[in-house]
Image (cartoon, rainbow, N blue to C red; front, side, top):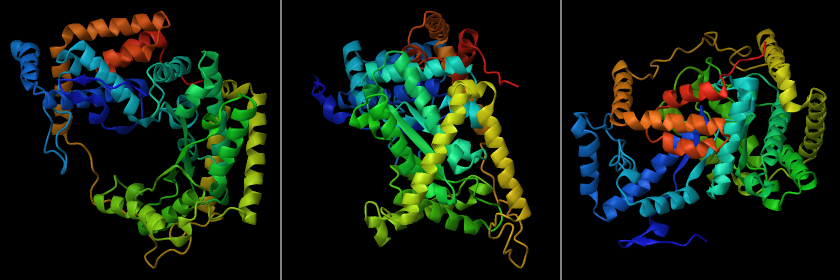
Length: 480
């Protein structure tokens, strides 16, 4: 139990609130931005509680007004119900205002409470999603640095990686391939983190999984098969404790199963996929909006997507049972069949030198593409029936729906953000180059990069950090 400290009557053990977020894209940098934002929010609470606003004003004058720079500000109106928490220090950081010991204690307490997930699983990025920027080796190192930092700083409530099958499925893989490649990727992270001397009982609970739920029968058991294989391996091969053996997973209903024809039918498909997930005891669930096939979801479509989960969980009687399909013949049979098929795929990956060896010959990527082509072929020939798309069309032929509005940022909004970034760079011009040099030196000396990123992200932009790391970590190049 962390000992609480009191500063000027401010009880840090009660004042902190949990902040949760899913981090995508170039994760280590974005995670640094997010962690600092969470820390600064709690610094703001401390500042207001102790009436230290004058010190914030003094610091703004010193850094911005003295250079003739505008102070950064929030663009537009605050969302309804938002009290503006986090805006007091916009353009500053808490350690510029507060004593070092106070800031350090707020940082420690925040890191112990902050919740969320890093969704940047670099292996599935290479295999399916195509958003790699650094060399695979360097990207793996960054992921390891994040997990090592989490262990050292006791960040227990934030998942350091969401080992993702969703993007593998969206790229075209069938449910067996999705599950096999995802679990194989998971074991690769375990092996890599162990090779760096990390304790499996400390990093195991920070791993989470993310699967897609399509309409195929195998999806009804994807969670139970994943948990079965993971628990057996973690217990028998790695001697992990019971907590580390527990596979936690999130389900998102299938985006690939949404169609721009008869878009109202998408809610029906999503409801059935949500039932699969809830009956299979997923830890969390995202239900897609019916209009995602054509545009960014509207408020109305998002509410309907949310209602699917609410109605199942609050109204559907059978869902009130913890595990309503246990003992069912088809579920038990599917569980055994899917597990056997996944283990067979493990053998094929092992024959190719493991996950990283197979990636060198693009085995996973080729397999996903072949399965995608097969699915699309069946869809176009009608052998795989999709109501309102290739069969049982409406009297109008079920034409593709065109969105009334495509939601995009305006040019004004874009320029505002660019100007704000340039403003922050000018205010911290000396710090930017200093932090980038520290980051590059840490990469060369094999120090923990995320520890340095926590400081660099206070002053540097995502682009500046990325360009600096390209020079010491290598840029991604796909094998051809």
